[in-house]
Amino acid sequence: MNIGGRYKPVAKKKHAVVDMPYGEVMEIFENTLCGADGSSRLVGSVCGDGMFKIEYRVALGKKEVYETYCMLVEVSEQPDGTTKIEYAYVYDRLMSWYTKILSIICFAVPCAAAALMFFKFQLRTLPYLAVYIPLLLIAAFGLFSLFGYKEKKQDIKPMVKEFEELLMSAFSD
Image 1 (cartoon, one colour):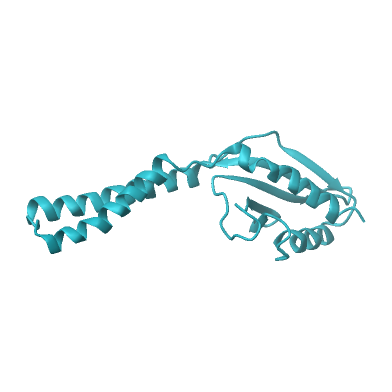
Image 2 (image 1 turned 90 degrees about the horizontal axis):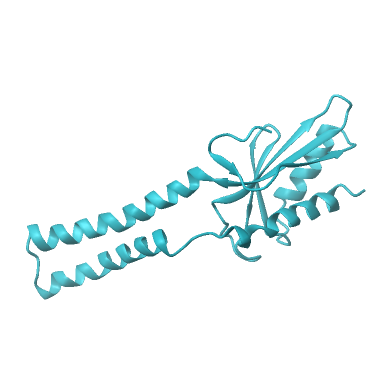
C-alpha cells in the first residue's frame, strides 16, 4: 500500500491474510463494511479497485463523521491464491487544509461585507444595523470553527480496534 502526500500515517501499517479467493473476500468485505446495518460507527467508501476509505462516525445514530482522521484499506490478490488486506490509520492533510480555508472564508467574507456596508455606503441607521447581526454571527461561527473545533486523535483511535473486530467477525468462518 502506497500512502501518497495527501495522507500522513498516524500508526504503523497492518495487514491480514485471508485464505479465500479475492472475489469472495471483496464481496464479504464490501457487504460488511458498506452495509447499512447501523451497528457500527465505521463508514466505508470505495476509492478504487480494491481501495477503501473508512471514516468514523461521531456517534452511532448520527451521519456526521470525523473528516481529518480515517483509515485506508487495500485488498489485494496474492500469487498463492490468498488475499491480503492491508490497512493504515492516517491523517488527511487535504481535508484539514480544506476545512481551515473554509473557516477563514466564512470569517473574512461576512466581515468584509459588514465593513463595506458600514464604511463605504455608510449604512448606519437602525434598519441597516439589523443586517450586521447575521453577518457577524456567521463570522463568529467561522472564527470558532477555525480555532475552537479540532478533531482529536484519541477520539478516533477506537476506530482501529473496531475495524479489526469487524475483520475478525466477517472472516471468522
